[in-house]
Length: 316
Image (cartoon, helix red, strand yellow):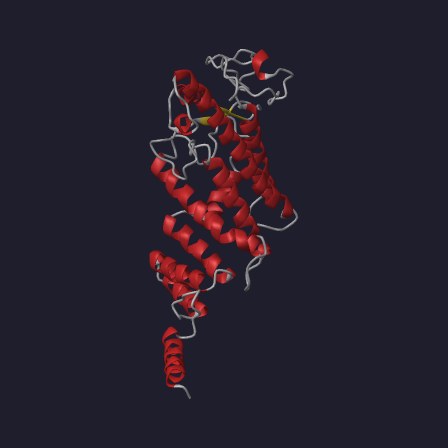
């Protein structure tokens, strides 16, 4: 054999052994996915949630399509965050139609650091579970095994969008802590001062869309607020789609109670759009013929500044 060819063959064989079976374009640790999952489960049992997360993260890297790796990573994320998915679902189910109750996961009971911890956990769990729900994974966990959990997680994400007003993935000092409570039988409403403060203060969203002066800042903030409400409606509708799929299943929670809450959240998002030509609250008046953003209940329906109009913001 040609010496160069022989040398190349020896090097190639040696390199293959060194890689331990990995291909050149998909580096892996060489550890077995199932073993990593077993190690993670044992650490979960020992209460070492961060250690479990590390094992499940490696398992997901080894096999991103493993439903077991994804499910247990989601479970460890919840445990590490200190929240319980079932209890969160109870909070949603029991918050319906209680006059004066705040929207779950918002208001003074949920300061920014607490809300952000939940928001961050929900984002991770959502990413973990969505491929399972969409049927894009292999393994023992299927859509039916995680559908209620996935519906709860998706709904909580949508609700917490109200606190992430600049949609940067964080709930912090750059956002407004909206005080959202129920008003009689009319559903949820924003605290009037919160809405006024949002519009009149530049939270960064206005600058992001090219505002150049005070008027542009205000109008751009209104546009950003409407985009926030649109985003919330999309996410909440996704959660309701999941819930409607499981209404006939026997569960420990009442999916229809959670669905009723989320329906109210969608009404909140629709009713409070500003400078929108539609009659979002269905009372026969469009924005410009009804509510002015002035902290007053102009039409006497118990809402302040809903379906609102803020001067001349053409083009936004």
